[in-house]
Length: 125
Image (tube, rainbow, N blue to C red; front, side, top):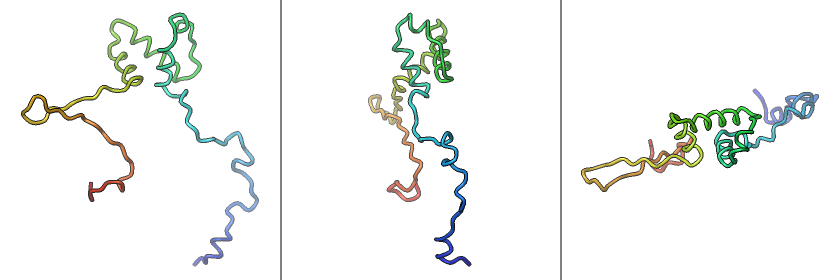
């Protein structure tokens, strides 16, 4: 059995070796960089002029993916790629579901994402 004093006085690494103090290059600031996202690269490439777009050389994987998708969407048969780029840069269009017998009664389909079920007011939902 462990006492409170034993738990309080326990030092898991008494020598203090290892971790980020010895290797600061492994430390992450934990921040997300928007320039690493494909959606940001789509928007960036779409704002470029014709000459700048043709001369663009991708440096990251996100830039390469965005460049390939945009080049595909420019082609005559690139409707699916155009939809993908548009959905990512401008957001998906709302989709309506008709309910009931009236033609003018529609409800927007919305999905709420919440990883915590404790926030619901109704038990069991």
